Amino acid sequence: MELTNKKLNIDEFLKTREEVLKTWSTGEQVKDLNQNINYAASIPKTKNFALILKKAKHDQVTLTQPRAGVALIPDHIELLKFLSEEGEADLLPTTIDSYTRQNRYESCALGIDESRRLGRSMLNGFPVVNHGVNGARQVQESLDKPVQARHGTPDARLMSEIIHAAGWTSNEGGGISYNIPYSKDVPLDKTIKDWQYCDRLAGIYEENGVPINREPFGPLTGTLVPPSMSNAVAIIEALLAAEQGVVHITVGYGQCGNQIQDIAAIKALEQQTDAYLKKYGYDRRVITTVFHQWMGGFPRDEAKAYAAIANASVTAALARVTKIIVKTTHEAFGIPTKEANANGLKCTKMVLNLLADQKVYMSKKLKEQTNIIKEETKCILDAVFEAGKGDLARGVVEAFKRGILDIPFAPSRHNANIILPARDSYGAVRYLDVGNVPLSDELKNYNRYMLEKRGITEKRPVNIQMTVDDIFAISEGRLVGKAKETRK
Image (cartoon, rainbow, N blue to C red):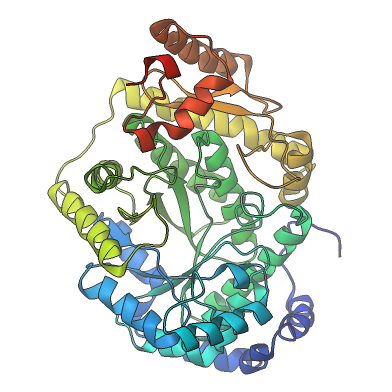
């Protein structure tokens, strides 16, 4: 079937569904779609992710959500209960293990057996496909807050069937954001098709009275991604989801570090997502936002790590995002303890509470940065639509071939990896080399000007060494990377 941005008709969807459910034995458990929908409809509204986010947006409060997942059902429930009660998390995750993300269910089975034998998780997440709908329902029924699947899966079709049948009312990911930053050889047209299936499934639940939240993964590689590039991808995935009937969409953004640029990026993202959805006829969509705390290298010192968490929380509070994904002080070491995870949540919650009644007013600088991000994003999106001759899905594939869409430091061979980012003197992420990204001459000159100002201030050339220094800067206790000879 040729790739196109058209809503899957029900016959086409059901035909594909027969094959998807044969992927692993637990697929048989969710064969009755109507029964799955009826179960999901019975979940209390207080545990519906989409409705909780909608209310939070209306009330202008920011909700907290951690990342968390272990191999065995009882341990996973215990972990999430701890984060809910001790960590005061508003929304609960289930981070899916790496084998499931690659559809390696046999390896998951071995990991589950090893975890039982050794008495500790031998997987870095929850193998939901192997546990099946009954196991996933056990998790959902044991908790009093909404659950979301967070993963990184190029082909999440069977996983999506199981989680929604279990009453999990939010699914993270998309055909771009869960391919290019995560995989090396997976074709882009395949992941777009596979995620059209996931979105159509969510749309079918929605059409039958069960609100389902869909959340494209905003940070992408999480390393110096210019806001206009990550925003363009988020808007594209929102449009692709909306075509399949998704109503509740959370667009995300990963902290870059300059507070004005980060707030501007979130404002631009929310406004442009809403505008593009309306432009293409997707009315009555509910757009919410998520801010990811710093995704790059973390300080190893615990006190310094708390500072990074608190700093991100200030930005989220002032930007009035709908939710924030919380980091821990163990980021530099690996998977955190439940106590460290809870402490990161409490630190974030305290900052949010302190700033709940404070606002950021539109300054000249904030307006300028918002407009620049919008202009850059529009340049990119216009070129994507042109590349697809009006078809967004085809345009995405062609845009990556041409380098119109280009994500820094992504492992995918379908990504050009030509653009090069770096920070200006104020820590804002700019395009050092725009590659084939079709920015206007005015925008190219602006990016170059801001980086040359840094070069003059630091008495250094504007080149790739700036990028290298910036990658490691926060882990070394600063935002803007310093030349080696000036580091203390």
